[in-house]
Image 1 (cartoon, rainbow, N blue to C red):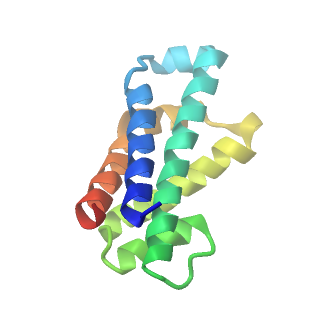
Image 2 (spheres, rainbow, N blue to C red):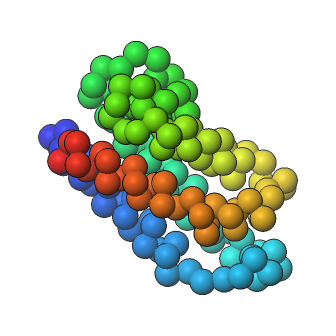
Amino acid sequence: MAEQQVLQKLLEQLEEHLLTIDQMSFSLEELLSDIDIQHLIERRLQLSIEVCIDIASHVAAQQKLPGRERAADIFLLLGKHKIIDEELAKKLAKAVGFRNILIHEYAKINHHLVYQYYKQDLDDLRRFAKQIAKRFL
């Protein structure tokens, strides 16, 4: 599959995940009290961030950027090399940490943080997709 097609497919996956999140509507109180909402939003956020990691990894490999062993570092590399803006790169590196919490610290998830990410940080993923699409598609 051609490089552009791979990126296009990944960007479409991200768009689908974000759309499923956008279609959700719940309050902080509902999130805190409903385990089904917790599991659903956690999984959708995790998948959205993972697709961004896949996109970033693909671009970093395509550009042959050194030092791409850790997911968070890949976003910082993209920022350093002006592929995405550096402020966004730092935010996405933090998103990797958030994803790691969702995956590895299930019993300790702070749902106030999940709600904040749901309400405030999804635009970072959208900005990332736009910057990648503008540059590579």
